[in-house]
Length: 203
Image 1 (tube, rainbow, N blue to C red):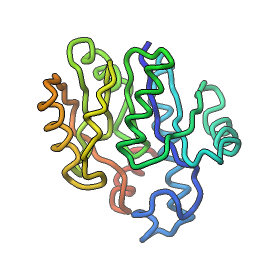
Image 2 (image 1 turned 180 degrees about the horizontal axis):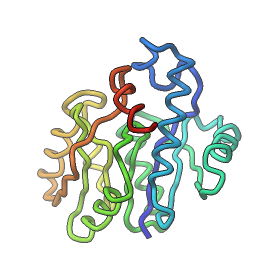
Image 3 (image 1 turned 90 degrees about the vertical axis):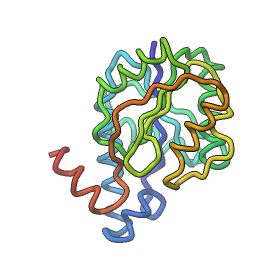
């Protein structure tokens, strides 16, 4: 079974979508974030195992209630994220899922409304022949990373939240001799302009 790990933040105003909040305000940014999460969850096929990796860990009860409201008919296993920077959290997410018995793992965020079941399926199929699958985003990062074995070297020394993330990750993969499959390039929702673009797709 394909396991999809979805990185989540409890939608507290001021703590989610901070770039977006600069122009639309923290309350609206938090509401938009919830719409994005709901849209991404709806696009994950039911035959794939869905695990929500949430932050902060102390909001476990609130996150569970939020997931029940937002996806009442979808089984979402909830696991707290590890502490540390994004690289550390990604590394530990994969390590924990592999230790729990998962065999093919995709990690996604909630920023990409173009992500759909067909792309997730392509990623899973590619991992039958490749070591790493990456979904490039227009901002120089990636909206998806998939592995079929732990590769912590992919998350070390990366300048997170910059336009260098994808290039640096590809360089790490090349140095490790890993075979990479690239998915179609998509765009993330980070700014108000991005949201206006996404809103038209969600309506």
